[in-house]
Length: 322
Image (cartoon, rainbow, N blue to C red; front, top):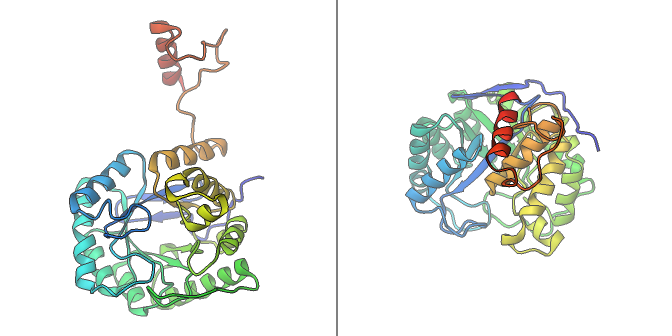
């Protein structure tokens, strides 16, 4: 399968502290959930210091983007906007003080969005598809980016037995309509990112269809985000518990990228960085770290220590020449 290259309306997106050319780059969004009940890590980054350390570790490991959330998507009791802001704003402030990484706040609350942007966030990641128009106005006034996600339920409520006649077509049409709504609220076309919402109000068959048909999402012309990491559709497809879904997550992310996704939202940062760099190198967008194999009269033995100092010197020279 060849890689689909979407015709982006605005290939270069300028965030507050850095720019990305999505015509030749794939961005990695790392996940930081400052909740006591996050679906994947069960609250491992709920403590402020743990959340900040995890975010900065992700940056050091190669993440382009940190997504910080204080309320899970899953159904549950409402949280006051003040408490949600208290969870994410200190993390945003601490990460921004140390890095120019892109920061998004995962929220659907306008007051939280305003506080997050004031603290240094670049993006609001709204998993409810602009369920509250005021959030769009806050984003527009700040000149920030917005992620528009397909989801059908009201925030944090159950949506039993979702049904679609053509899930890919219906999701694409929903996102197209919501983009128009965002534009009517004053959000610039160059500030919009779309996300089909893997698993959000969809069963596993629906989500697999979205993954295989991601080209229709990318074809909308906006950088598209694939949030596939360790989700239930991976577990149900492979009969794998959360701790054993990394390989399936990377396979799903790769398929989405090959079909035009330009941002992947992932928990396992080092593995995801390697996946992205392999794909970018294969597309000619990135040079290999070094060239040594079949670059000289003979190939060094495969074992890294087999040639000792001479082998290490040759490898170092190859890296310098690359």
